[in-house]
Image 1 (cartoon, rainbow, N blue to C red):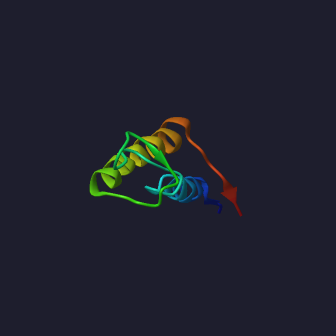
Image 2: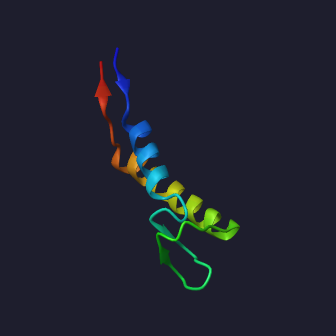
Amino acid sequence: MSTDWGPVVVAVVLFILLSPGLLFQLPARTRVIEFGNMYTSGIAILVHAIIYFCIITILIIAVGIHIRAG
């Protein structure tokens, strides 16, 4: 019996990287994209959630990332 940690690791890494305002924010308050401003808005949260869903779906379902433990 082994545990598949691939989806968990991918989800955590993407959640950290795609947090609005941490590395970048799309759309920003004054420009289209800003880097490291630590501000956010409702539309930025929605855009980042859509990007997160698309990337995690591609990596887990289409590519099939697996990390086996046990």
